[in-house]
Image (cartoon, rainbow, N blue to C red):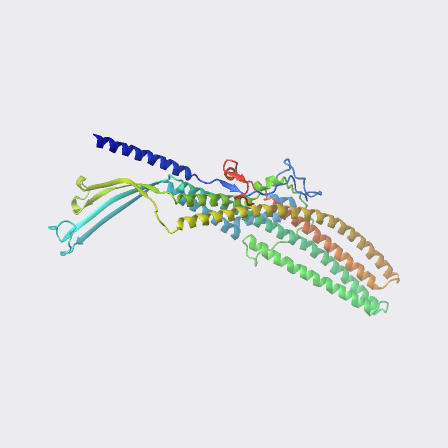
Length: 505
């Protein structure tokens, strides 16, 4: 009686200690929370001024995710953007990378379900006559049949969250790939818009040079006739000819640049450059869209690359959690069953039935420091992803401020350049009148014509660069992209806080 009570007490104490140990281990195995590095925030963009942007405020109109390029008023650009989405090889490869991430997540999620395997084996065996321990006993036949039909069911109990953390890391990587896809799409759309704006700028430049070439041709013919009549000097003729050939050279250079841009656009939209052509626009004056920058705080939700960097922090945090669970035992529930017989003709009978069921507890007692090294590697990877997130956010603010200041300064420079064009035209008219009256040499006319052409080309270039700055600003602001609700949840206060890790920013 005493022995039975003692044994019962020992079992009770053992069970209690086991339950307490399991509770303590479970408490130690809580998954780590995502921690984002702290990034300085301001109340507004300091360069957001001028008539080309709206002051950052929560009531500013949002940028359209699809169709933001329509503000330039070029139907060709809209058509090319549609071709880009349908045929771009770069966009298709980004989509394939996202699909790979989705498949990887599905593969990880499958570990949360039981695994069921089946096997069927039938064979003819001969055992050795001199084998010390014969399989079927000392009097068993040398020749016999063996058939087995079995099912194997196994399920790992996720006590410490290893599997759930793996799924969480995979899901975060999938969301990062989705954000990468949006980043690639925005980058390609912005590159296409930028290239077409450059091309339209070259169209205007080519039109200016064509007009100049035509005017210089008439001037050269006039000076040549005056030279033959003895009115103009050979020096005037040489100057007129040099000016004409210079204009022709500049026009050919402009045409070459346009052709190269046209080929680049063909590659962007998945077309063959040999058969692709963009006709000059009927109207060479493009509209100047207004881009609302909004508040700096909203930039974190408007850029897909920031969302991707954030999700990679989530994935790295979950991976660290997986590494920590390696210090705890694994529990696998397994069951086997089926039929086994040496008689093929009476295989599926009740006496041939076999089964086995029971849990398996496995724990690594010694691994030479491999688990500690893996935990250190995961910690370092988390630090890297956190700092990449911080760098991405800081770069985003820099890019917005860069484009805002370029937009403003290019606008002011364009106003000054337009005044320079007016002054050059007045100078050319005065020089021409003085030359016709014989009060000035033709050098004054050539100088005024050259200054006027340079001022007009500079104005066209500034107008193009200002519009290209709006494209870069749209890209810096995220192009109207908005983070899905599940990504915002991962960055919420319940799972992520914007503080420093280990005291380091």
